[in-house]
Image (tube, rainbow, N blue to C red; front, side):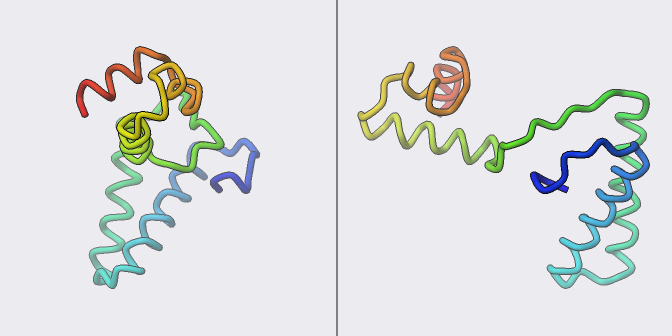
Length: 105
């Protein structure tokens, strides 16, 4: 799915995709097949139980994780080349979020 597909799909199709993705990742890591199947089912069932009936929105166009972004913000700030306001603009977040990230470190 990712940024390649922008179509709306039903919840059960999302859960199938998640289970397939878990299977793919665990197979790449040579996890035993019996564990892979159980893990994929547990993840998709857990997501269904936790978020069933809710409308979920995934932002598009954000390829980096929040942890990677946090580390990038800290590194950029430590260079001395960016003000807090410039970091907020660069990363598309609020000034308060920048302050919070830098405070926690």
